[in-house]
Amino acid sequence: MHFQPTEEQRDLRAGVRELLAGRYGREALRASVDTGVAVDRGLWRELGEAGFFALRLPESAGGVGLGLPEAVLVFEEAGRALLPGPLVATHLAAGVVPGAAAGTAVVTAFDLGGDLGGGLGGGLVAHLGEADAVLGASGVPAGSPVRSVDPLTPLHRVASPPGDVSEYRSAGALLTAALQVGSALRTVELAVRYAGEREQFGQPIGAFQAVKHLCARMLVRAEVARTAVYAAAVTGDPGEVAAAKLLADGAAVRGARDCLQVHGGMGFTWEADVHLHLKRAWVRAEQWRTAGEAEELLAAELLDAAV
Image 1: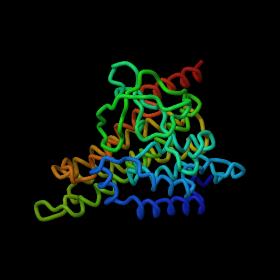
Image 2: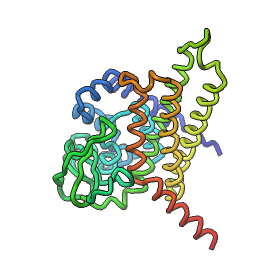
Image 3: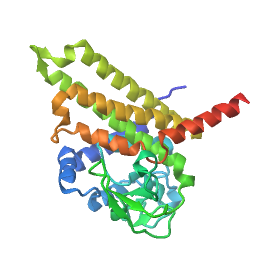
């Protein structure tokens, strides 16, 4: 068994990376942070035209007709670029919500849980103020703005959950895990590059064993998570999806923290991009399937297997 992307899948990934590098590079990312505009409608439509949202929609319905393995490759690249917006919800809404597949509609979902709920009643919805629709709901409810840890993931608190997304939860968790993997791999790149450029005591800090080990652990976590995400995309097994989400969340959050440590004081400045990866990883860790939910699912599967 050759567990490697096909040539067509590699070409797809390269094409998405090229598109995002040209359309949403570092300058565009920083401009989004400065202006606070998370969803660029023009870019959203371009993504739709490129088939980002209609990737898994059948060709008979105007989609690309590919599957989850291709989708995770595409979302991995989006995570690497820190592309903001309700990407997962809009992708899942293709063929369900008019305009979602083409990128002419921005669709969000009630997919946040865990610590982000704050125990204040109701729930949180990301990008509610920018959305044209909510997945599984008949309309867009009113909400109160809530301060978000991530400057490019605006949050609103709603009185009650708008829409049932249970049927989308597994796929949503897997695609979010792919975003986390892309971010984790990017923080490895940032850490290794900085370790090779920053000098201390007359040599690059990457020559020191402690920094080498830090970067090596980042890479191992990211690659293990990537393998789990790819495997879950092939099997579609809910337990494997839950495990992939757990591993990817850990790789993204811990990787960003380790990247901050490699950067030292520079990593904590607003001018650096590392903190943006950490803040986005924190939010994604609470989307579609939290660590607690994934652990409960895996524990239930292990119990069933033991009986």
